[in-house]
Length: 265
Image (tube, rainbow, N blue to C red; front, side):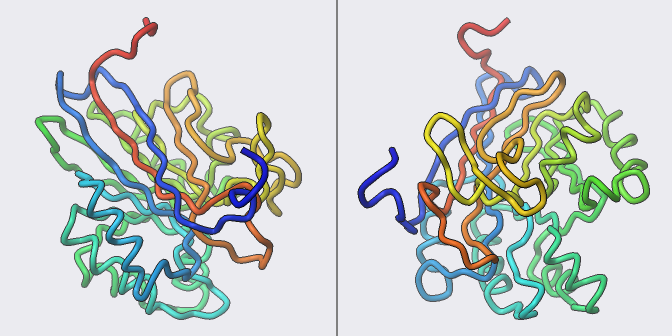
C-alpha cells in the first residue's frame, strides 16, 4: 500500500512472522514479541497501548533489540516504565543498541543496573539458557557494531555458535550479518537499527539510513541466510526528526515451531 492514510500513518502495526527449526520440540510453538528502536516514544500514557498489545499477543518471550532510549537526552523514564510492565507478561531479554551503549559506556548512565533491578535480562556479549515448551534455548546478545566486531564480539560469537541448543541472538546491527556472520549458525537472529529504511517503497523496501546510504541491506522483515534466519524490525520510533513514510511503527510477533514448512526440504 502506498497512498491514502497509510502513507503517513504513525499508528502501531502488529506484524506476524513464522520461523521453522528442527530443534523446536515437535508440535510446540514458541512466541517471541520484538520491541526495537522506540527512541523514548510513548504509545499512550506510559506506553499503555503498547503494553496492552504485548499482553494480548501472549508471548513466551520478549526480545528488545536496542535503541529504546535517546543518548542525547539521557532520560530513562520511558524505557524503565515500559520494561517494568512486560516483565509480568513474559521474560524480557534486552540487548543494547548504539544509544544505550553511548549512555552506559561514554556517559556513565546506570541504565544496565536499573534494568537488572526490574528483572530484565540484559545481554551484553553474553548468553543465557532458557527452556520453553520442552525446547532448550540459548538467548544471546551481541552488542558490538560491525566495525567493532573483531575486537569486542568475535570471541563471544565463536563460543556461542558451538552450542547445540536453538540459538536466539539479539543484535542491534543488521550489518553484522553481511559483514561478519553471513555463514554464522543461528536459529533466529533479531535486529533493528535501520528503522525500516525510514521511507518504504512498494516492492523495494527501505530507502535510506545514515549508516549505509540508500537502500540499506536487511532493512525490515525475514531474511534466510545459509545457516540462519534473521528478522530485522522496522522499529517503533525515530531519532532524526524525519517522518516514517509507508512505514508504520512495528510490534513484531515471531512464531517459532518445529513443524516443517510446506515446500521446504
